[in-house]
Length: 430
Image (cartoon, rainbow, N blue to C red; front, side):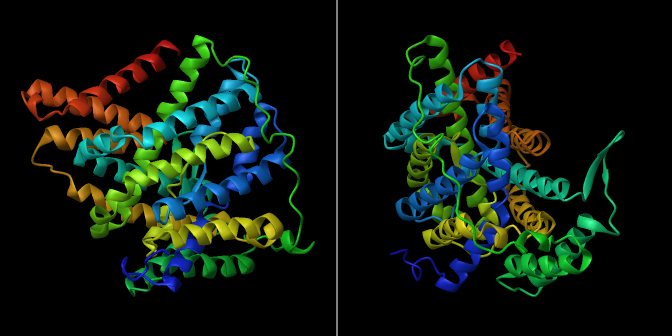
């Protein structure tokens, strides 16, 4: 079904990669409900909806695109959903309609020739910049959320590296690095497991989460399932909200795919033609998420952990989906893994994704400068879509000023105009 031999992989490698991706993104089960509950939604219902959304959307990715990517509610997208409710005055039921409509439009765009045209014309060096920027971003997420890096009055600083989570990160990174140097194909997964065990000895791994047993029934999600309010559907302001969400979904998806294909290294170009189907899966995931009562789904950058472990087919995604199904009933077992054990995996993935910056044509500053802008904005702001937008606009500006405007395709101009509108809209609404 997944054509493992054709993709030069095996079931053991794919299962290992799926487990690695799962442990890298399990935090979404806690983070997403915590964020969306600020919009007035039930946190317990959101837990179940999040898990089921990941299961369905990731299965779509597995069987439609046959790619090793996991799909889940996007962290930036869920924060924007809260903004829609808290600052824009819409109810969460109305905000869900905006997600649904944007998802349907996304699906339509994903199955038209427009999709392939845009994908072919994305400047290569901007793709490399996106991959490097996302690599730095997820590495810093790992470092900051594990207390390796802390914020002080003078800015970011090292945490206490002699004890606690930060110490475990150091140990885990060294263990994983050594396994990689020894060319262990399952270095990242083994690193997570070994670091978790060491964490028991150091007190970072909280074994109390399993004291009450491993099995628990998931709470109902009836409070948010299909709870749409279509009353503002035909207003101009609501249409603008739908377009904004659509833009964020498309750009986050594009940037995520570019980054993950970058992790594949030499295999990336061979898998890139599958991006069209990946977009179809991503867009269907948005529709599924809205029906379950969630903000837009998107392909997770943490999938890079599984890709770096050798995952190349939908079997990896299938394993991720199965793990989230189990997590619905045995969540205490999976919550045993501390984030400090996952952080080294994210750092390693960041290292692998950063390799794409070496492919940038530094002999042509009209190519290198926009790629650098893209990477640095993504890394420092954690806003993937904004980084790509700024890099794209700088790319157009430099080509025009230097006299190389003929190198710009119609697609680059059209997408650039959309990016310009987005940036102007953001400034206007500040």
